[in-house]
Image (cartoon, rainbow, N blue to C red; front, side):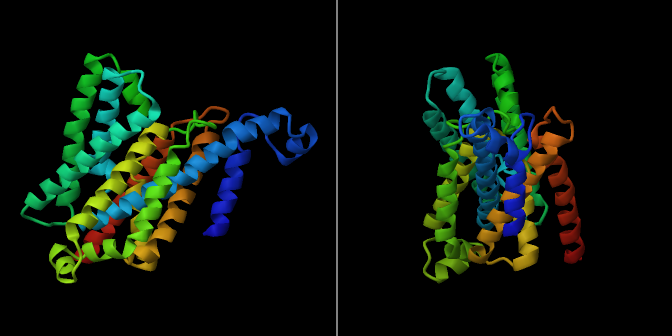
Length: 314
């Protein structure tokens, strides 16, 4: 996995419209055009892809532990839509706010969305495998419709569509650094990994072991909300990544969170790098939105996982 990740990251650095090759870097020197493109766009974009892929995959894993369902992630539970609503309202009411403040507002709305979804899940009488994701998709649809209506009324639909179409085409030095906060949240998830493994077995079981279930749940909600907000502000919506990657890792190494997190992070980063390379080369020199590629591949993998789990359940 490490070699694959390095290979994909290297390809990401050297693939693009501008000629950035080892030969060009050598002949033009550190002050040449190739070196400028490398430092200002290619390396930041590759780092952003790695950070987003790893952090979103870990956020999906934590969300699944909180809900105790393998078919949920921030973009299918309303968390991303709530964060987008907060971002839209901040843009409408205070257009001059700095990016840090907008990220904070999006995180607060994402946290509220996570809390609301968990409250709805607790009220659902049946714990069927498919019912919980269906509730999340319905909540996402409602919040997304409200957000779209507000955007139409305030003439901000273009900004909303830009967030909905996840893309790293505009990522450059100075425009991705908030993703290191998402990386910090991913590191916090690894520190508390054993606690998340325990709460994944249920509130009663965790309480009997002396674990403060509410505190661990609040920590998980904070991790998911902050990661979602940072990714949304930087690159927009990236669907299905937090759902598919943890499930694939679960098939390979099991459900222990501490053992899974490094694999989830590496596979999430590799998956996003590979999808971005497809998005940049399939219509070269043009680029299609990354969310289109991730959504297409993720939807197929999600359907396969759903059918596989359903067959095993029978």
